[in-house]
Image (cartoon, rainbow, N blue to C red; front, side, top):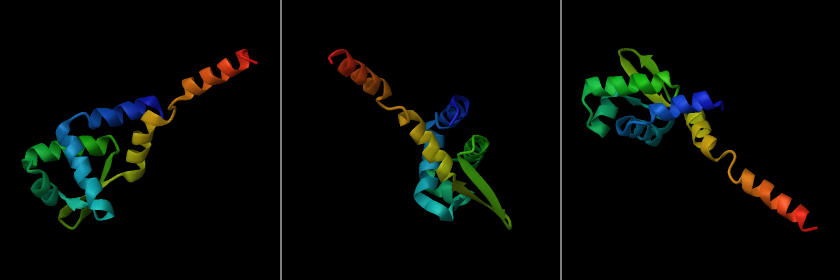
Length: 107
């Protein structure tokens, strides 16, 4: 994942309310939730929720599908997993390189 894409994703999650919405959709799994169901589970006002859903959709963290007159919202699991992994992708790389250099200098 490119740094600018990750930054956009983390910026979208930078609000406690948007993070709550994403976690609510993650808990719902592949069935997704309607706007009304999300509102019921989070207690957010409709206008506030609409704003947060738009931000999350623009960042690619959720997708929305219109079914009749209802909009169903889904977590974008692949994107969320990629975003979560972005932080740890290079975990301990410098430590491993430093350890190898130390081993080579002691031989």
